[in-house]
Structure formats: structure tokens, C-alpha cells
Length: 95
Image 1: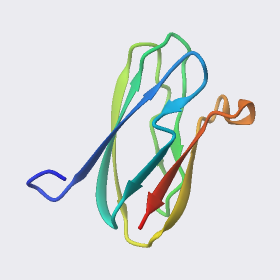
Image 2: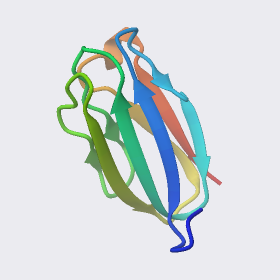
Image 3: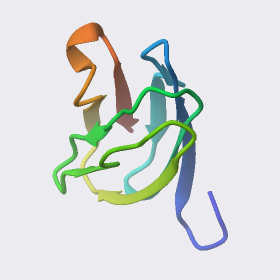
Image 4: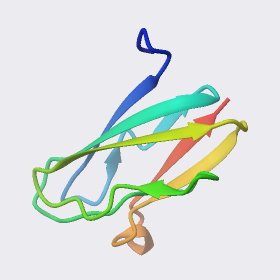
């Protein structure tokens, strides 16, 4: 956690259609995600939290930062809108 109280999580996405790490944990509050596409295949990661956020189109070699605030503990899916049916999904656990 940063001095500003924001929890920061970095996730890479790639041409093998996976998020690394696939499962991340945080506490309730503000969470800043940095998504890095280390491949060439475009992705669009949705953060299915109550505030509904996402990366938008993330082309190869792009990086996108998304800030969310989650107040309720729970498990929130993070599918790729382009490749979710191929198994490209992550999970956010708020404990």
C-alpha cells in the first residue's frame, strides 16, 4: 500500500490469453490496477465491481491504469471481454 493509502496491483496480460497473477487480494478501499499487455493480442479487462470499470481496448505493449473503490468484501470477476469464453479470467478477492 502506498503512503496515500491506495493499494496498487500490477497485472500482465499476454498472447496465451492469461492474466498474471490470475487471482489478487486487497482490502476494502481504493485499489489501483496497472494492466500491462506484454503480447501483441488486444485485450479488454472488465472489473466487475459495483462501480464497473475496465481497461478498454488494451493493444499490444500498452499499459493502462484503472482506479476503483470497493467497500464490500467479496469475490469479483475480471474477465477479458474479448477472450473470457476462452478462459481468460482473473479474480479480485476483497477480504
